[in-house]
Amino acid sequence: MPTIPRFFVAMPLAAGTSIRLPDDVARHMRVLRLAAGDPIILFNGTGGAFKATLLAIDKKQLGAQVSATDTESLQNTEPPYQLILAQGIAAGDKMDWLIEKAVELGVHQIVPIATAKSVVRLVGERATRRHHHWQALVHAACEQCGRNRPPMVDAPVEFTAWLNALPPFTSTNEATRFILSPRATRSFQTLPATPPSEPMIILIGPEGGLTTEEEHIAAAHGFLELSLGPRILRTETAGIAALAGLAIRWSS
Image (cartoon, rainbow, N blue to C red):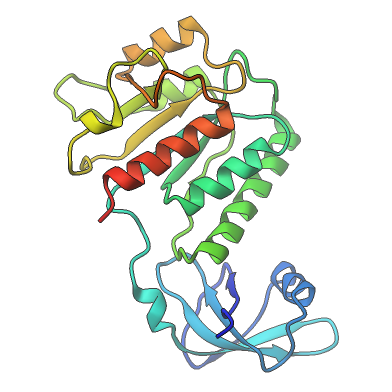
């Protein structure tokens, strides 16, 4: 049986109602060659999803008749932990790829960080456009992978400003802040068998990695070194490998 296409819409949804679909969603449906009468699934990020039927309002506008809750979507697709990926902003299409795969692997929040070795510098209108682009990627990835609660993707932030905005770290806290390092002696196998109760942060540097000073600053904010092995991974590999490792370690 063909998979019914899913679409994120930023509007209230309720069974028995009709809605006009946003223009960007309607364009996507036309690209997929959907027609009036076709079944679709709609979700708005609040946790559930709804079955609906596509309607043609006129030649330019599409709508949907929302019929019922999609009971299959009630199965919880979120992991049993909250994971924040603090990612040094990668150049080219690498950041897009990273965000898409991180969503598929269950990330709770993505923080794009500008560091000393960042190739890409995003400020002003350029930063705003890229942020909106990343948000759209998150929604598209959720449509594909079946998540009904899109993770947050933050606006780009400077490394030190982000660290200083974190809650104060004390040595009595659970180990929840990690930075990947090929020099680390702590492995994923040494992590607790159950996930921490607090959100966990994985910090990944950009191309070229973090500077020694940045690593020291991160350590002062409670970040511990964690190893994926002795090899030096590319920035677009490291975070995704870490997310996959944690999904295996803490799979429910």
